[in-house]
Amino acid sequence: MQVFKLFLRIAKSKLPSGLIYVIVFFAIVFPMSKTGSEQMNFQETELDIAVFDEDGSAASKALVDQIAKNNTIKDIKNDPKLILDAMYYEQVDYTLTIKKGYGQKLGLTDKKDTKDSLFETYHLHDSYATAMMEQYLDEYVRMVRSFVAGGNELDSAIKKTEERIDKKADVSFAEFDNGSVKDENYPESFSFVFRYMPYVLISVLINALCPILLVMRKKDQRYRMNCSSTKMSRFSGQLFLGSAVLVLGIWLIFIIGAAIMYGGIFKGANCWIAVLNSFIFGLIAAAIAILISSFNPSEDIISMMTQCIGLGMCFLCGVFVPQSMLSEGVLKAARFLPAYWYEKVNDILCGVQSGSMGDVWIGILIQVGFLIAILLAGVLLSRQKPEKSGLRAGIKKTA
View 1 (spheres, rainbow, N blue to C red):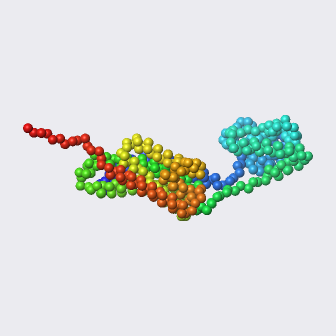
View 2 (cartoon, helix red, strand yellow):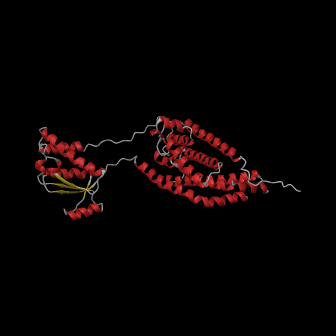
View 3 (tube, helix red, strand yellow):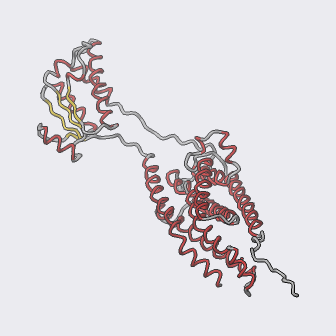
């Protein structure tokens, strides 16, 4: 097993460059998976608001009570320094001052009298929540004045405004299965882990496997093997065994990491089919590495080819951009690449695309076809004879 031991020794020196992609992969996918699960829940935004009622009228108190229904009122002294400190330390998100004369001006329908004459607002950062609060105040004033203009007294107008504002909208998330094989144990939020796996598998395996194969297949190395007692079949077998161990080890790192993010052992058939799908694509990535090494490129060219193949295939096939957002022309071209069928299977399993279990197995079988074709091409190229040595045997004539 000398060839196998040599393979592992070379792999040990080449793996650190490939493991960088592993760290980056989990650093990106874990937050995306967590964010994806949070998007399935709706919760109304609440602000920490400091309200200063300088008017003290019934209308101003009604507004304060209305704001307190959906926000938290903070008790802070009306001191600019204290307010600024509270906002800086994020104890308060928004400051509202109800000016004197609010109760008298609220019922006026003069177009020149705007919201700015009624309130004084202050916030440290512009955000969606503070913009919603500004819109809320503007809508509240306009609605009260609309009821007053319709002939209602101010008190009645305020009550009717509160009734309209207190109405809650029913928020629900629509799911479109369309006959898909979606499984609750394999949600879309977790499918991000497997969606981005093609890029990292291609990057790690090509960067880790190609340099090892190039060292093992150097011209001088092959000459020495031909002169040794080790048969070429044993050399190829041990080389294949080392490659299989490397591929399986790298793939297991991702699967174990995915299981930790999942929260334990995978549940449901769809999860295990996704695991099988990723294993087949891992073999495809290894076959691509074998094919590239057959051309005996330099290490600089390997790095360039890794980026071209990885980024190009992933952008075209729906890894970085979902297939539902790609044009028909791009998808037609992507069908000739294995990553397209990998992503199609993954999208069907998580319910993003409609399809049956038959479509899933067809996609997996097509990937197996790509694997066989790439392996055959790599084997045929690797069997080519190495370039002849520059040494030539000369015959010197004797006298």
